[in-house]
Length: 564
Image 1 (cartoon, rainbow, N blue to C red):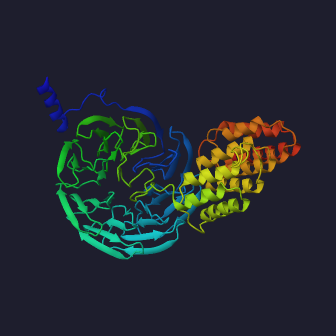
Image 2 (cartoon, helix red, strand yellow):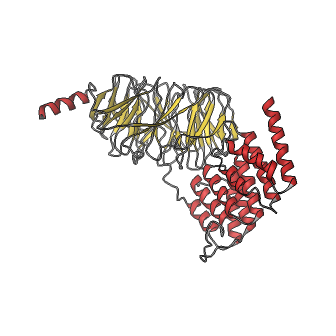
Image 3 (cartoon, rainbow, N blue to C red):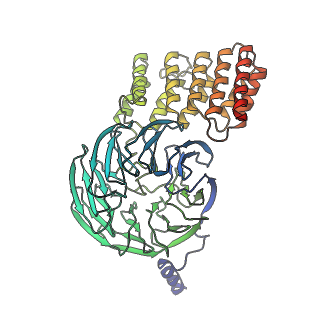
């Protein structure tokens, strides 16, 4: 029996057999069909929202359960992204050299249009800067609102995305075999020649770099080559396991695990070329897309656990907030698989572009409690109306592009949600009694939540609309929900239906009719039927004649739109 077990393990290490699916199963949880091939890695934000790019020139936003929330038609062939910035902006790049920024509600915020070659996936700096590399060899550094800070022209072309170190150094590999380091101001720091085309650098906790170039190479932050492990084939970008092992596949069909000293731990044959980086789960397994229809799970010992086959070639995967393995394919489908993983590995660089948001920066997302977040909380949770206004002014300036706040979207949602619902949804800081103070602050917080436009902002605004008895604030909440611009589950419509027959609510009902009309008109996908139903009931059953006339006019406009 011991000999048979040894032979089974040996064959698995050679990639010739795989343990039964019952030992390490996966389950297909859901599929989402887009309008074209999915050839880039999906991104996942702090709430588990999923963003996927399709060859139908569209950015799709999905819930963690695969339900469409909105879609953003780019109208151009896509080449890069998606990247989710700290404040929820989603960046996508096109083959024609345009970087577009969508808000968290699928509305265009800004675009940068150098048109100097196809865009590569950008990386995000600690100061909000966006480092964008173009295939033609130009590297741009932009502000968080898309304004150029500096540019750098390399001698050759670029085929790999940049990475950013903890000190702000920008690292990029070139097609003419060089690893280039740039200072924060765009000046050259150093360059190192390697034996082949250089991929996207990976950075560990000591700021050492691991790069692919016909093998894997470890480079110090000062540009000194410490060791090289040669692989006789084009090599995919590496990723790092939590135990320090470096995992990389190659076009010779093998997956390699190396030690921190550059020694081979194991090598497993996947039988098919590998050109995409793996993703490491918190179970220690590597999930690898091959140049075929197969997604392969490999254990920390190099054993092939299972193979998932799509209908056509797969792209490289990511792992969602709940541990769901997400992978797109050329069959137009985004697949969601449950595995033994419950999330990303807590390693310095567990997947391509570092994390689910694709920040491309070492230790990104580790600073949610930044100094700016601490200050904003102190201002917002104080009992001073003046200090609360200061918090709102700071957030407003950030959203308008006047001053960058190093604050994650989850913090903005928390602070604005508290200010919008203080004394109504949330208790006051001084007592357990509910109070409805600071109405002007609550109105402004609602407006900023609408401008933020995220799923979390929408949830807070729905609570305010349903719970607040101040009609002015309820109208502000409804107007902001209209600014968010989507009601995919019909939650807003059903909340409106609950209050249709109330008297003395004309202004609120007019705002509701206006919001439903704007949401229906601005929707780029299927509108939830409750939105139409609520507008129709307002047209027939609202207590105010003005509301009935307004809702009827909106329905007439929609009818003319349908006939066209």
